[in-house]
Amino acid sequence: MALTIVATIKANADQVDLVKSELLKLAEKTNAVDEGCINYNLHQDQEAPTLFVVYENWESEELLQKHIDAPHFQSCMAALEGAMEEFTVNKMTQIG
Image 1: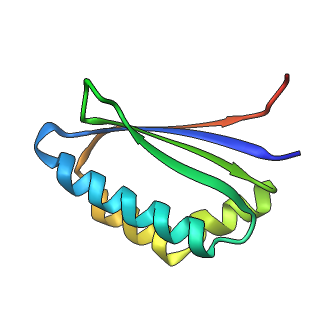
Image 2: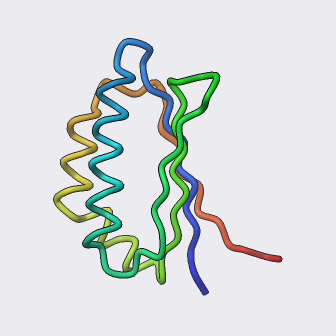
């Protein structure tokens, strides 16, 4: 069964462009090269542009961990250090 991740990122108001740019690069790279990535979709709130949500599905927990350990993910997290007010990750299981 696929593993769904819902990540919520709230950028600092003065860092929205940086956060958006880094998240777009991460989404593009993840969709292109990460084994087990079913989909990795980035969203930005229309009324609160500091709010980003990533909706992603993975074939397994192990392949998700490979993504987290990958250089492109680690590079993104390093680039965003201090630029985010909030970063929340929820691991979800589809039940219906």
